[in-house]
Length: 558
Image 1 (tube, rainbow, N blue to C red):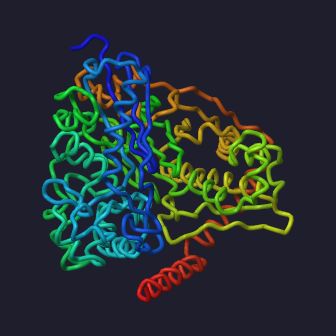
Image 2: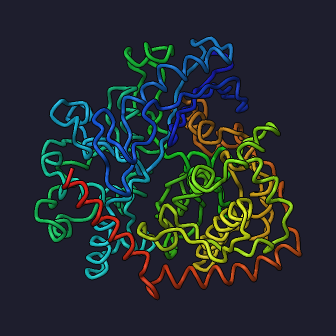
């Protein structure tokens, strides 16, 4: 093996892909680069056509991901001053559940001329929530039939997951469904492009694809949803599974040309951005919850025993590390909410003041909001602007801000939204602890860890110290660690975590008077949470229904 072997980790995020070059011996990050997706997220207009998209859609263009391989990887190698011949493996992670329909050779259907104008032929990003009606039917039928897999998903399957999105394609675009040979997670598609081998990773299959105890939902269940859906698993989904950290194949000549890496090096089985981050934070034992905070937040946690946690996204045997039950929960909107607020609700004078101070608008609002005492703004918000992933699992819920007056300022609303996401995280932590899966340490990863006010709010709302991952590129580092395992540098991900991972413990500590003040606000948040989210008042569902109906009418008129 090459002396001082290097590995490459690539994190495919919502808006861009990031590649880092890592020394396998100690996890040192030698260089990195990013590539922004040229088409971004298509949530209003279908790329290349100008056609309007309905509400709750979020699509991407698969060729954008190849740009990460062609640009970010070579640039990361150059930044590291690395000899490509020293690289022994490459690992990748992806947002999930992000799906694409393909032909038998992996060609996305949107790249075929006959489907270029059909939105169902494109990548459906994780935050594509238009399949909520299909998810509702899956949940009702599974509950009625007592499907044994349902408790493994907290009692509810999300509109974001594989089956709901596939059923949406079948029912809304049967021509796309008929032409589709494979329904592919992008975590697996990118590995397919790198190696020429299609290997379905065990992580997304378990958490997003209802693969439990060696099988998927049976054909009888699927036929009861829609007679034409009965063969979905055998015809469109099922494929050999690869365990995490295993070698999916080797880098093809074509991919070597894209990346500048040696042909034939190990390529790790695909994985999910949140789940690869846990080992990078040293979270390979029970109790340490890792929150990967970016546009959304995913919470992952290992447990020694199988428990049924209400509203969790899933629990999978070995879903994060071998030998433990891997638990997942999450919030569909966090950084996305703050970004929306800055774009849509901040007056021009705030933008100008931020520019004068050399700050971003986020930094300026954080500065202003940090001067407030807890509760001083008089607001309380629900963090459902992108629906609720956990613990309610309902993407037709929507955001709400209570207490606004003519005296309410932009920094007030901004802080209230920061606090709302912290309250939502506390709901998740309480769901786990209440179900017998203790959370003994809370670790933050992702870009939002850089906001000190947000971190202090989370510490105060949770009433516990916050640790911070040692890397600013946690998912990419985690992918690089899996590459080291796939290349044979380490025997398993636990050994790689011990050598390459890092965490700074107790960086943000709760302030007693803030903890007490937030207890009162959290009690009020819980009242709103249950009133609007647990069926006491379905006004949010009615509003979503009207919006969808009117959008359909408008589309028919165009």
